[in-house]
Image 1 (cartoon, helix red, strand yellow):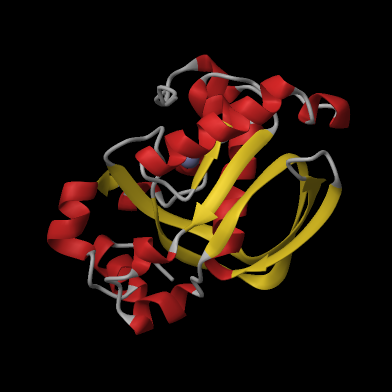
Image 2 (image 1 turned 90 degrees about the vertical axis):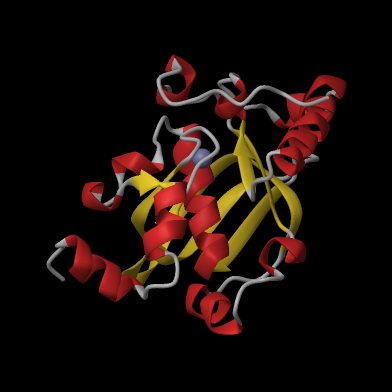
Length: 197
Ligand code: ZN
């Protein structure tokens, strides 16, 4: 089954989601929910999907960055973003610690702000303590693009969207991004768009 992904303006996207007890994580209902969220994420397609995006205020998100998503990207593009494939996994009740001494800025999008993108500064590295799909405690240390995905999804569980953190002047349609900005280095985008660095 595939869920409908709600769009910005839906109240659930602005609420802090509720924690799930380890016992409830192992329930049939939650296991089925995880499977359907996985299918919904693949169908979109996206590299992450948080429960509020399908209208549920639960602290649960699914993540997977498949190799096929980046098969046409240039090696330099992937290297700059420190983007590597991430296998499917679930994060529940996550507590995030931002690491690394500087932010990285890259264009980012969201299935709940469909058709748009913007430059978003994010920490280069994070530590996340959470439960996994079986309700077991787990610690994740992630650099690069995976760290960005985790920050984006965990923001969803706290009622935040990337538009709260973006450079507002870089907000644009995906069509215009592909037309004018896609192949430009970020430093040049910032200059062309009139942002002081
Ligand atoms: Zn999102």
